[in-house]
Amino acid sequence: MQSLALELYRLGMVRFGRFRLTSGAESPYYIDLRLLPSHPQVFRRVALRMAALLEGYEYDYIVGIATGGVPLATAVALMAGKPMGYLRPAAKAHGTGRRLEAVVKGRRVAIVDDVATTGGSLLTAVEAVRSGGGEPVVAAVVVDREQGARSRLTGVGVPLASLIRVSRLFEELYAAGAIGDELYVELVKYVSGSASETS
Image (cartoon, rainbow, N blue to C red; front, side, top):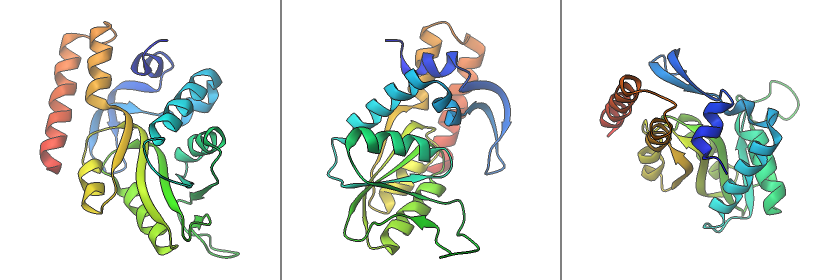
């Protein structure tokens, strides 16, 4: 099977250029895993790997983070045979006004998202699960951009599990000849600079 890094790159989910992030910072690469469900065979393999990754944790409920984490959390929940809910981007302005659409009270919860950057969305989900009476035991993502999410989550007692760290993803693309020397050096500097800024 082709490596995860190469599959994501081949399908246009890893792109290089100049991209503005949610934080306002500029990045030389962009990872868009919202395209995963458009490629069912790859999506299934990723979901299977995520379900296997979560087997190392004792959990009985999954919460996906909207929007990118919801399809992934749904697939993982089906494969793992676990109940699942999700965290909205914002509380509803009508009906119950809830942001967390889940029944987490008394549950050990695995939080699932597609990509971790600074960890802001994951921390919001941790807080929402705890407010709902659940215990977040792990946050799991496909790609860790290594920009502070891991240390921020550790600070609140929740480990971050990922299928691949972005530094490893770039190593694999470079080794396969998908990216050249100049871009690889720029990416390594960007990742190491991001890591030092958040440590």
